[in-house]
Length: 156
Image 1 (cartoon, rainbow, N blue to C red):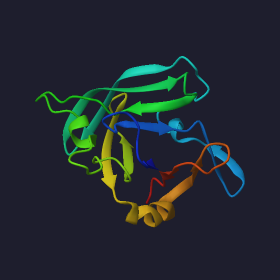
Image 2 (cartoon, helix red, strand yellow; image 1 turned 60 degrees about the horizontal axis):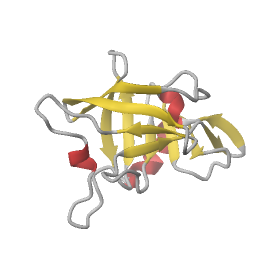
Image 3 (spheres, rainbow, N blue to C red; image 1 turned 180 degrees about the vertical axis):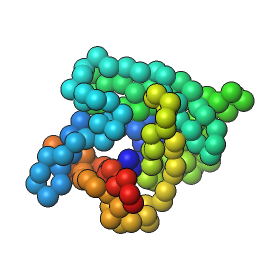
């Protein structure tokens, strides 16, 4: 699954908003959160045991939750590796430059372990290639005007 990030939220620019629904060509489609949860209609969901593997290093303690106050799903990329490094070291803006996740495309691949995902980062220049490789893609929200996201074909 891939999702365009935009500015990101949170002080460290480490919170990725995910959609319950999306739209493409006037048709409602599954939202980006469906990659992570079976039932995107849950309102009391919180999983603080998401493992993100980035550049071969596992970051533990990331959270996926439904933010009731904001009425949206959020993936909080705040995990810490065994060596003490943190995903926020990558995501945090520094000296006036955007952090490593802002205005990029985040690609997630499910691994065999439960709640474990490999993360790759692509530039926005790769959007058309990802759309072409996707079995389904669209814009987030019921209007379909939010962040673009998609699900990659298994054979692509």
